[in-house]
Amino acid sequence: MKFFIDTANLEEIREANDLGVLDGVTTNPSLMAKVGVSGKENVLNHYRQICDIVDGDISAEVISTDYEGIIKEGEELAALHKNIVVKVPMIKEGIKAIKYFSDKGIRTNCTLIFSPGQALLAAKAGATYVSPFLGRLDDNSTDGTDLIGTIRLIYDNYGYDTQILAASIRHTMHIIHCAELGADVITSPLKSILGLLNHPLTDIGLAKFLEDAKKFA
Ligand code: E4P
Image 1: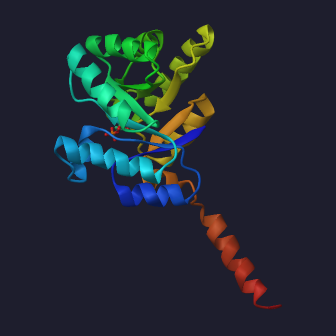
Image 2: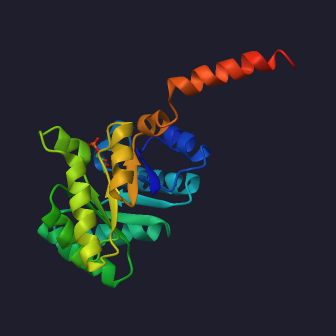
């Protein structure tokens, strides 16, 4: 399973990358706004900086919602760096654009996926990744992990090679459940990735080993 970090914060991206297990980055307009990046040139420059830090797929989201606009913006983003994946919303114009990008060899991430039908359409259009939003489903009394299992079943039934990129991860158990269900990728805040390190018995065990080591050091 690939690990992406879901942030536009360069410090966090560096920290996750230094861990040596990072395969990519996802961003969205809200994450860009959170780190105070605004204006087209600044946004493009921010993507360039992320590409310089991480050697892996970097999702860059379009903000147009009409077909021509999505194509123009997506082509511009894709031209920034070979690792850019154009992130396109799950709307009618978005599906048409994903088909266009796919035919042109431009890789895409279909975002804002909340149902199996949406994931099926995105795969048929040739999306490289689909992003089901687990946490936001959980926030609405719907088990987000169920969606991952259903999409896995559908994709395996027909051999779609669209990768399931589990998004809107809120905690470590989301990551574990996604691994059990066969998600290809998780994209997570740094906190949940680092949370995988934690177990009190590890801390207690290490303290004891270090204490005993003093006896023969
Ligand atoms: C996915 O690519 C999105 O950037 C992200 O995972 C959304 O997460 P949120 O629901 O925590 O905003």
